Amino acid sequence: MGGDSINLDNTGMAFGLVVAAGLSTAIGAAAVFEKRIVKLASKPVLAAGLGFSGGVMLYVSFIEIFGKAQGAFEADGFEGRDAYFLATLCLFAGMLILRLIQSLVNRIAPDHHCACDSDAMEDTREISVSIPSAINAEGEPVPAQDEIEGGQAAVAKKHDHQDQQTRDLHMMGLKTAIAIGLHNFPEGLATFVGTLADPAVGATLAIAIGIHNIPEGLCVALPIYYATDSRMKGFLWALLSGLSEPVGAFFGWAIIKSSGDDMNQLVYGVLFGVVGGMMIMIVILELLPTAVKYDPTDKCVSTSVVAGMLVMALSLCLFMA
Image (cartoon, rainbow, N blue to C red):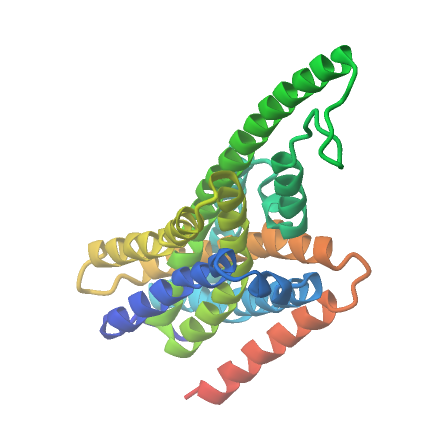
């Protein structure tokens, strides 16, 4: 397999695709402005979308990006077996790096997936704003003084509970934004590097990542909106969480530029291998578990994973020179 060089002429396109994928969090975040959007994001739809994205990322990682890593090492002078070994080593190194990032994410927000449950958020909000009164349903006062005092105490207790729920929801949203921002970083790196090597690969990756960024935007925006009653705050925090993807792209660009004008194939081999491993672990740790959570009987997850692989395979066949 020959070496696949990275074409810096595609830098503008690469950054554009990364920004577009990152901004797709805004689509999910827009649910705070229109409840009907939340209803469209049903569990089967989310499960199918996540499974499809996982299939795309698994196929491109194992088939395309791993092959490019091996080809880059061969172009740098390594024999076929050694090149394969180095590509494999970098692949698992990337998986380890993403595992460490995920451990950090879990420390910051161990239950960040729970924020995606809009029904639970709505129920929590309704409970938190329904404060019982010492007045009965007909508007008549409760006659017994001890009952009145007990009712007042209950009101005070409910107010305290409401304040705590609001703080918890707000913190959940902020932690989720940080957690999603952290794991969006390698996605931006992957899309950027993939586009430089092959625009068709980069475009397909950007679409897959954009699809699964939509529910992530929802995960951030809903709890912040329900905690602060500010649609704009929820939307902006979700948007900010997606903007870490261009940061990952900039990191990849800095590495490539630092390798010099001679287009060091060793650097590319390492970069391709690590990026492939990161994407595989994103699928294993994030996309598939969340998809199965939304579709525990597997009505659509497995099929959508295969569909994602098929779409990625067809795009590579169609655009292969």
